[in-house]
Length: 301
Ligand code: NAP
Image (tube, rainbow, N blue to C red; front, side):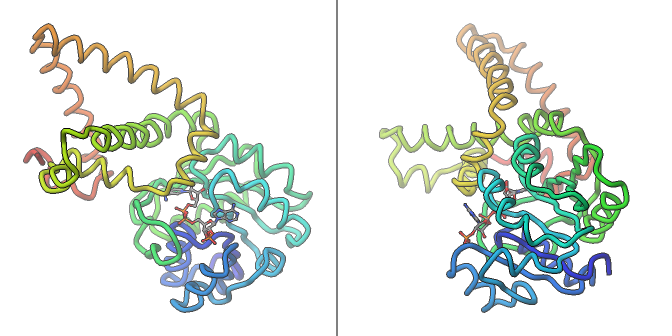
């Protein structure tokens, strides 16, 4: 057992998955959970999500060795302010927010002397959300990034052991660098998917049923990504503004270059470009970062 008592604040995909993984592997003695809505708390009680489900943040945090903030990034500050008076001395607080600098700025002022704050981000998710969406295998072989920024080494090591116990690979990263990396690998791609699905939706010449019936793999993948939780993603873009805008600027330049190549019939440019991007895909598969890898190279539509 790594922690005797863990408190989960927010009971959605990530907290739910943490609960099931911790219980499966005996990593936590008692997992206490809190969600703001009575509806979510009722579902949690019904499906056995958490050993105890609490109606207030004060109750869930009491006596916890580890407190996990698993709410949308924009809600972190308010939740951290509410938990502050009830933290046990020596406890560790972590968060699982998809953006790190903004969360550190929002949460750090609420961490009292003698409590350790180790921000983190599991690079694992699905398009599903809510208390029924979690599953123990979510973190299997996925990266879990810590951005400890001078946090107590023992507290960081213990959190690392927990993440590894849930099946994740752990790395440490500086928070601003994390935000730039994630803008490239996750945030901008999500915005592009949202946009593409929005374009299809706007294009009245393509009727709804055609979009649904004939959606090829490319578009289908976009619709899956664009089904991700609106609150979570609104907060990601509002709080990782600079890095996302930087990447979108570069994206637009590349898009214009490809657009020009299509217009001028520059097949060599297109072929060279797609050859380069294919190599990126190959290295991701080789790094074991895509569990759908067997279909690589067969062309999915
Ligand atoms: P989720 O399934 O939508 O669950 C969010 C939880 O936060 C729910 O229990 C919700 O309560 C609660 N919540 C929402 N707004 C709140 C507010 N203003 N105050 C207090 N509680 C609030 O979300 P998730 O996917 O687990 O994401 C949680 C965190 O993990 C986010 O910071 C996200 O950036 C990060 N993350 C997500 C993914 C992903 O792919 N989903 C991956 C890595 C990290 P109710 O149910 O009562 O509304």
